[in-house]
Amino acid sequence: MNNYIVITGASGGIGEASAKLFASKGKNLILVARREQQLNEIKANIQTAFPDVDVVVKAFDLSQIEQLPKLYQELTQYPIETWINNAGFGMLETVKEHDLDRVLSMIKLNIEALTVLSVLFVKDFADVGGAQLINISSGAGYNIAPMATTYCGTKYFVSAFSEGLAHEMKMTGAKLQVKVLAPASTKTDFAKTAMQDDSITYGEDSLYFSKFNTAEEMAEFLYQLYTSDKVVGLVNHETFTLSLLDPQFKHLYA
Ligand SMILES: NC(=O)c1ccc[n+]([C@@H]2O[C@H](COP(=O)([O-])OP(=O)(O)OC[C@H]3O[C@@H](n4cnc5c(N)ncnc54)[C@H](OP(=O)(O)O)[C@@H]3O)[C@@H](O)[C@H]2O)c1
Image 1 (cartoon, protein in one colour):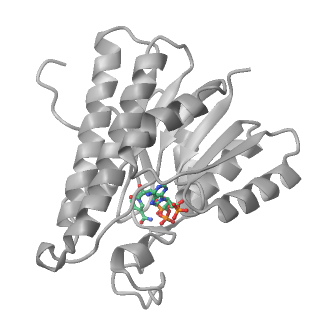
Image 2 (cartoon, rainbow, N blue to C red):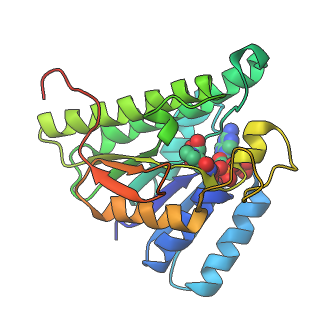
């Protein structure tokens, strides 16, 4: 049965919560991230709760761009239904404060890895009925956010690339559905990584992270997008509610 769902960045946060939700719906999973121990713990928890679900763990650093075709070949030995490019990170600071190596790592993961895996998936699955490619962008991929200029740039790429691909699928009569989820602030390790500060917490006293969705709420939003015919799942950064929408960017010929 073609029901494996690949989730990158599944060792925590939105990816982990989504893995648990898709497992509860009976989907087999392929979980990708760097931290193998976390992935194995998540696999064990899922298989205790849902013994019929198969979970494949793949520890991999997605910023190894040259190795991605090999990873893709390995994972597509399984019958895949949906590929979710979720792995990503942010940098919350001014451009002047950026460390160049970290900027390049962010571009590699948020843009290059997502693009390579999307292109490979589209080549094989464009004409496969029921197949989906879902890329995780951000509200920062539809708005410019303070202290997040470069991160916004990477996520605008994700939004524009994914919307463009969705148009391309429609215009060529392809069966693959391409979608993009744009979360608002979500309580995960995102803030700690983006601020490079392990003491950062979410909550009323937090300067930047006083309001947020939980990772479980975001997984529910992802699932709603997955079950809908819409292309964009946009989470409002004031109400923290999901809107399922048609592509948001102007398309010159659509
Ligand atoms: N949380 C938010 O407020 C928010 C808002 C909008 C959009 N987003 C987007 O949502 C997605 C998920 O983020 P999150 O909030 O769940 O953050 P998170 O808790 O920090 O999770 C990030 C995931 O990406 C994985 N990852 C990071 N670098 C990787 C690499 N080089 N190779 C493979 N996997 C890697 C991490 O696992 P390992 O460390 O084990 O590799 C982890 O599983 C990201 O694309 C983020 O930009 C988040």
